[in-house]
Length: 244
Image: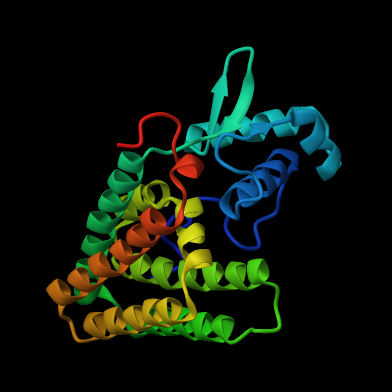
């Protein structure tokens, strides 16, 4: 069974290479803008402006906004339109704790179910991550996109190796793609190298059939991202209301 056949995309969104109808093109574009920060928390989505930029009518854009609202990335208010969702500090803590528990479990399962093909897929993501780190010729946002793509590949391969379709589905919504991208963007070079070192350590524990250690390492790895978000993102960029 291939790791690609998990039935869900890691962190949600469209799968690479997917053919796109009008609504899916609008969904993929708007989602990408939210993930990489072009559209900020609390920012309103102007359907007419988005439709013009994508050379679409407003109908597919409206459908894309409904999809994003169902995913939790957009909040639609009656007679007020839609806006990019905002998060409280507690929302961030809850999101990362849920993801850490689910993905640690995926690691534990992968340690007893992974095949050589699964390990090769994880290795490919680790190599891509390392290559992206060395792309000093790129603009920071483009380099972060490459790193994010490689990171998704590593984690998707691990989840695929768990052979647990329901767990993969849960993680497709539990992983908060904008928060992951933000953490990767704000990591220092040393932190990014450490992140990929964790990928390698987790991979090695899976290969050695050590489920508890693999799960523990994944939990620590994910909490690094949580700590970066809480340390580097200004409260007003995250929060709509009480920051505690």
